[in-house]
Image 1 (cartoon, rainbow, N blue to C red):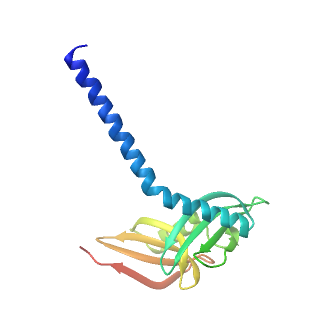
Image 2: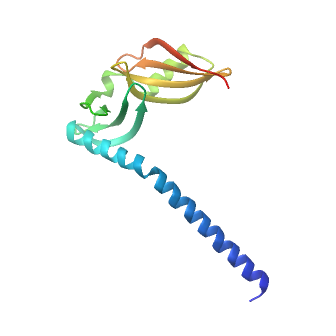
Image 3: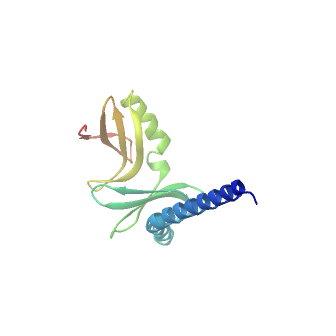
Length: 161
């Protein structure tokens, strides 16, 4: 083999080893989160009527809470809140506000913002949609009731750097 070919093969081998190492590091870092998510899904299936899962979120505000969205055996969409150390709570999505409905409410009530993250959670014992958004140069947290989509009065501003 030519010297150049050896260097190319060695470079490719080193690159593959680095990529494999980065992948293993990512798996190592994320494994606890994936295990928590799997446990939350299993708990939701055991304690509630959910049979298939579409989405999961981990909410950390007043308390750590996993929220699972899926269908029951009748094919109805439902949400399940699993507060850490608490009882599971399920509600039909039709009796509350869906993610698309809350996005439409946000668009009408807070025009001109950029949504950074929207997720369900628990705020002061109430089931809510938690909105993290940017308006001009500031970031804010705002909460909307899951039951009817009404905005809660508390608004949290993050300081600028």
